[in-house]
Image (cartoon, rainbow, N blue to C red; front, side, top):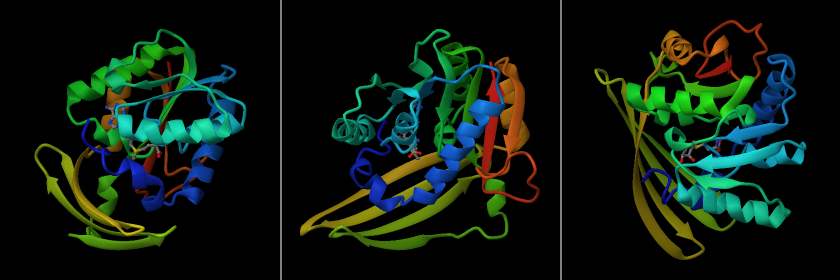
Length: 252
Ligand SMILES: C[S@@+](CC[C@H](N)C(=O)[O-])C[C@H]1O[C@@H](n2cnc3c(N)ncnc32)[C@H](O)[C@@H]1O
């Protein structure tokens, strides 16, 4: 896993996601209480990253197991857990390789992580591993970036500047689309002045382009039931209109 290797250390600075995190956690708690009859206590975060969902879920008293394919992201998470005195099981593992059997009341795979699954086989093996990890009636929750939402407002390139905590970052993002293989190629070039220490790195992040009913089909093929989709983290089933972030909830 090379994506996120260099980005990990600056991930929390670049992605300032306080509002998004609040919405995600509120949705997750609502889904755990309303969309399954299982009492959700044990949660697997299979794309834990730097712990944006892990920490708030632990703070709310859930038992969380954290897994991610990137060692570098997990190292950042490890420091946060240590600082807060949390000891939880943590695994560096591709989601396809997680090997739990009916252990969790819920599994999450949040913030575009599902778009990192590129081939149909990746998707099938990943959903199957998550299915196996869940108890009967256990809940799977994940989101996908909905690239159809960009139709008509696609930006060929973007340069962003960040200046926080003495760190200056210039980040150029050049998206390209492979419209046959359904892949959104997210090429990033990042220049960092970290209190006088200069680095730069390039990350190539391919993201699979999905449509809503394609994801639903993958879930059905894996035997998931009660499949529902939501138009963003603040949708509780009543929202209409377009959305860049689609949320999927399904039961084992
Ligand atoms: C955008 S980050 C999201 C991390 C965290 N959930 C958050 O919201 O901040 C995507 C994460 O998915 C992880 N990831 C990508 N492909 C994966 C795979 N096949 N198996 C497990 N983790 C994967 C990456 O390493 C990265 O930590």
